[in-house]
Image 1 (cartoon, helix red, strand yellow):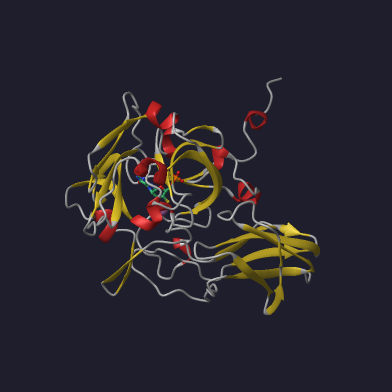
Image 2: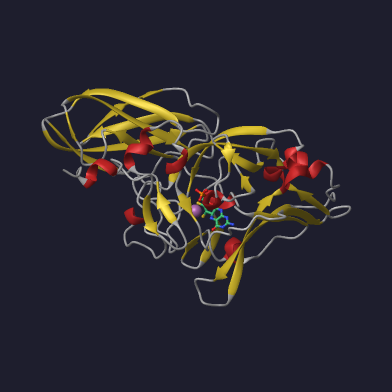
Length: 348
Ligand SMILES: Nc1nc2c(c(=O)[nH]1)N[C@H]1C(S)=C(S)[C@@H](COP(=O)(O)O)O[C@H]1N2
Ligand SMILES: [Mo]
């Protein structure tokens, strides 16, 4: 007798696909429980189709430098290597939780992952090129391009970083993820890693770095990845303080006598506190140690839940004094929704 088809189907797909082309996919709820996200389940957010050919790939450094330099992949491999463990979140994560829901990718809460990245510190790379004293920022330029959302022609993915952030010792030009070469969807063969910043700063398929003495005004700098509140644009930068319960999972059935577990993270400072509301009663969760200064902080709370359906909410605070708000200031592009989020579980 043939085996049931289900015997050949994994229990959960490695990613929850939001859109297949270009690929946008969330880390599924069970995989969010891992301190380091399994590589195949690291969320993907691509604005354009994935560049697939890497033959002869080069990284040009140009602009406000003594003389432009071109690095090959073997040049980079010969430089000192550095590894960082980073929680990276898409600025559009939990856009579906906004009211009304803005246009843009309809992300739930799985556009966040924690990943080990290896490569060359951007500061190491820039040390040899003679950056001009009046340089203000570095524009990271990707190989991918396509139509703008506003139909005003085509655009390449490019984002600027303040020079001080670019020169931070943990800002990387990464070639490896989780000990293996980058996969095409995660930016092979080269990408930027900018700890503490929302995902858009982590430019994939990196082909050029341009040093600038005046602010970059590209589409993805000034028209997208900005908080647009009544037409006033504020650039999206560091990740806002946020938390989520990952065990029990949303909508799960759980024993009344249980331990709530989850993660809290912030791009503005260490997590200092996580509070959990069971219905209307707030409790103080116990914090564990994050696996790196840029990785999410574990929290837990052993609890006796009342039998029945119960809403659990979490509220994290960070060392900068920021606390997750009950409501965010609505912005038309739907970024930075770090409002307190509730999950429903059934206790029995
Ligand atoms: N070249 C390029 N880099 C990019 C993007 C892109 O569309 N093109 N998307 C950005 C956004 S919005 C996010 S959230 C992260 C996601 O990285 P990941 O797909 O490896 O998770 O990549 C960033 N880097
Ligand atoms: Mo993103």
